[in-house]
Length: 174
Ligand code: IMP
Ligand code: MG
Image (cartoon, rainbow, N blue to C red; front, side):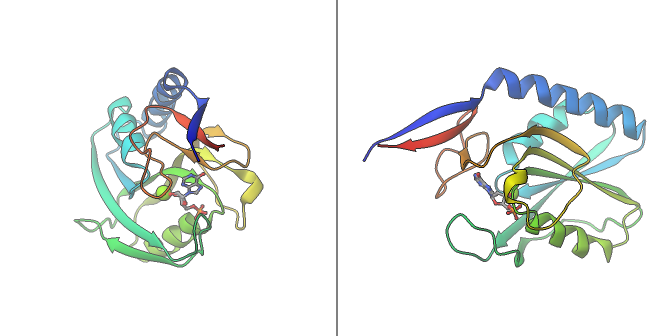
């Protein structure tokens, strides 16, 4: 069985969109300091590009999460495998996600973070797959809405593979 990757969103399209998102975030937070919370592992590529497109005083935190579930389906039960390095009370938090699929991960994280009393919590996701939504999560800043296909690249994986592709692609098996 061989695998080919079909390009869904090109490197150039991603670069242009990340720039726009960065400008939008910069304008909306004015000069308020921002905490980017990069949800590992899938968001690591998007988060570093997005951080460089935002012109605000910011710090970046990494949150390790593992979702219990079978294969490619998220169960919604999220385990924190690596927590933030500092408290976030009274700070403006922006979750940076690779993709909102069922929405269960982000819904859970938003609930969890509420107890830490940040000033505000918003969400920036590169991708959204509305066809598979199981709970509604508001995405404040969204890169692209995609159809119901399993995608890889630009941080996203299948069994830990393809995170280093510079574009978003679909795995085709024949
Ligand atoms: P959720 O279903 O919204 O909870 O999605 C949780 C996580 O599942 C995402 O942050 C991704 O890491 C992963 N995921 C969902 N859809 C895809 C996909 O198409 N490709 C790769 N990872 C995915
Ligand atoms: Mg993720």
